[in-house]
Image (tube, rainbow, N blue to C red; front, top):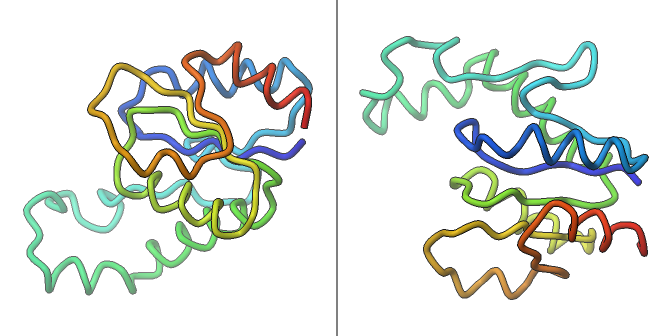
Length: 141
């Protein structure tokens, strides 16, 4: 199965989830290490002071060629995937990706961590508490 792992750059469990899914025989997209030829995106590539942007700088950055390439790489991978695994906790982008996957009818699995409760996770096909459970759920898909 082709899987997109949605998480945060700061989530230390993300790489272990990718490794476990690959060990289980799945093709897995890793936004930190995308497929050859794809672009790894970081706002700091556009401006080292990105964290101090206001709305105008942010809007300008969204149309920067580096942002366009990063978006294209990620969105192509999202379309490629059969299933999405969210590794909680994650931020806004991963939340949007998981919601998009639900809307597209793709299989969704959330690996829930000790985090603030969020009601809308009920839309995901499966909510589990470990990568082992996620692997088991995807085995039957």
